[in-house]
Length: 205
Image (cartoon, rainbow, N blue to C red; front, side, top):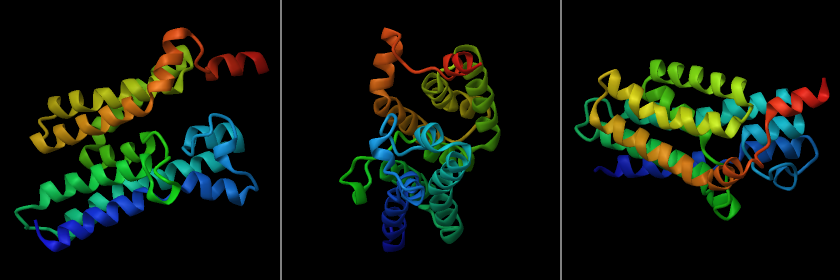
């Protein structure tokens, strides 16, 4: 690969490392790492600071995954290493979010940044996964379970849509990392201790 490719991959990691959830929580006068699940992602921001901050965090975290890949595809148009560099930029961005250099490698779970990556790979596949996510959360109330199932399904949708191998490999890697970062949620789901939005809604009604 060229020097430009390596610089783009490095930039993708550094952009992915920007902790927008933490930055916005500071704006609200708190440290999101000390509240709720202590995660810097959009779900914990929404629970702690409300929908407005949650949506803003979600958008910026999505852009962290989408923009580095978009930039690499644009700048390397016609380059024989374009697909490889774009894939590595996506992987670097999600790893940056999960293991940010700015926070001593203690980051989020990668769902929103992964969503940005998947939006670049195949928006139609994302639509199918969002439907699966919404159905799951509506039925059982577990955002984590919806995230796990929807991320795992991306590779299937891509395969059904005839996506090239590099997109399948990237989607598989991102989904695997999301599952690994959700290991505590998986344990709570298996033991019935995971927090449910459905229960919260019912208790407040």
